[in-house]
Image (cartoon, rainbow, N blue to C red; front, side):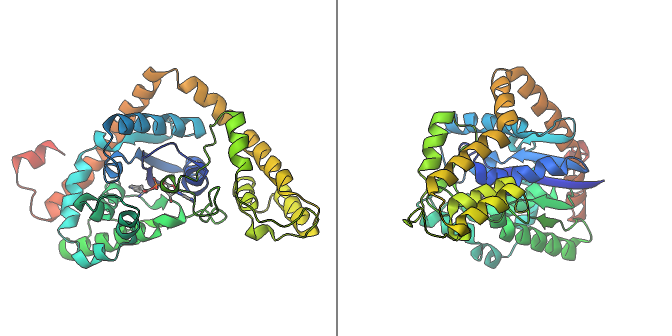
Length: 332
Ligand code: TYM
C-alpha cells in the first residue's frame, strides 16, 4: 500500500482553501493509502508567539480533521510535538543543505514582507518541512499548489543526503488536486489566514451568509453576460462542486447567458457550502464535547508515528556515522 504524509499549520481556523487544496485529498486518499496526517505546530512557532492561541488552534485542527472526515482507524493523526525525533532529522538535513537553497525559498521573503519577524526558524522552515516528510518514507505528499517549492526542496535535500551517505531516503511526489488550484478568498487574492480573507466552513449560518455576500465582484449589471472564470464566487463554487458537476456547468451557462445577478450566485454558493459541509458541521458539534476521544486519537496517532519515525531516524543516523552511540540503540 502506498503511503501519504501531509500537515496543516495551526495558525487559526481552517478555511475553504485548506479544505479544497489539501484536506479533501487526505479524505479521498484514506481509501487506499497508509496515511500520516499531522498538525504542524512547530512550523506555527515561526509566525506567532501567542502560546494559549497556539495550544487552542492545535487542538481545533485535530477536531476539524475528524469533522471533515479523517478516520483514525485509517489515518495516523498526530501533533508535531509528539514526535520530536523529526527535529533531529531536521538537523541532519540542515547539514547537507546549501545556504543558497534556503536563499531561493519564497516563503521567507513573502512572510517577512508581511511583517513576520525574520527569525532563523522562519528562514530554515523548508528544512523542517523536508524532515516532516522524509521521516515516514511517503510515496506522495498531498498539498495545495502553494507548497510545490517546499516539496521540490524536500526532494533536493533527500537527493543530497543520499548522494553523500547512500540510499537512505525515498523521494516523494507532490499530489495536487487537478481542479483545486489556489482558491481565492473573499477579496479575490489567494485565500489565506494572513490576508484575513478566509471562509470558515463551520461558521454559523448567519455570519456565513454575510461573509459570502461580502465576496468582491465586478459591477456589471444583472442583464450583462459574464465570464465565470473571472468571478471569485464561481471559482469557489467550482472547487467545491467539482469542475464536471452538472451544477457547475449550469451555473457557468447562466453567467454566460446574462440575467444572473451576483446575489443569486452567492446564494447558490451559500447553499452548496451548507449542503457539502452538513455532515462535517454536525460531527464537529459532537467532537467539541468529547475531549477524551480527541486525546485517545492523538495518543494512538503519536505511537504509530513515533514507531515509523524512529526507524527512519535510526537509519539516517547510522548512515552518517552516528550509529555507534549508546543513545542510538535506545531510539530504535
Ligand atoms: P498551510 O498550513 O499554509 O496550509 C495547509 C494546506 O492547505 C493548502 N492551502 C491551499 N490550497 C488551495 N488554495 C488555498 N488558498 C490554500 N491555502 C492553503 C496548502 O497548500 C497546504 O497543503 N508548510 C505547510 C505545512 C506543512 C506541511 C509539512 C505540509 C509543514 N510540514 C509537510 C505538507 C507536508 C503550510 O504552511 O501549509
